[in-house]
Image (cartoon, rainbow, N blue to C red; front, side, top):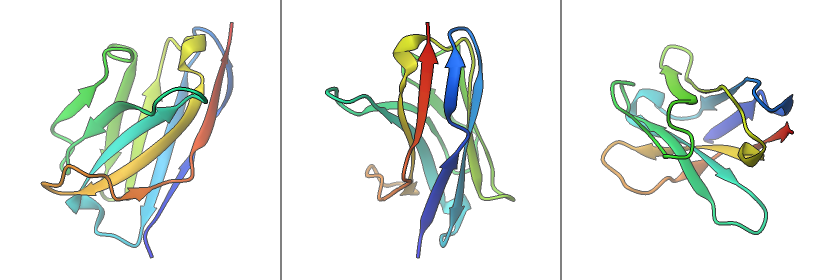
Length: 119
């Protein structure tokens, strides 16, 4: 079955950096667009960044643009989210998700990893 497993979350001071990883299995990774979402209790889930199947096209929410970088390694079936200049408002559970090429709906989700940024 399809599995997406996130790692790399943790506690960091404001201004610091973290790199999240999401390892995929059970699917043909290169056929799936990938996204990183984040969820804060009491708030709506936010799409933070997306990357196309080849990695050639990326998109970022305004709230993370210029600070976060999404990338992927199709040989390793892994997508990354490099987060720099972290702010307390970046505190959230981060989820990776996969959608088949040309789809608009993310159908596979990871279990999430907690990122906490202290001020």
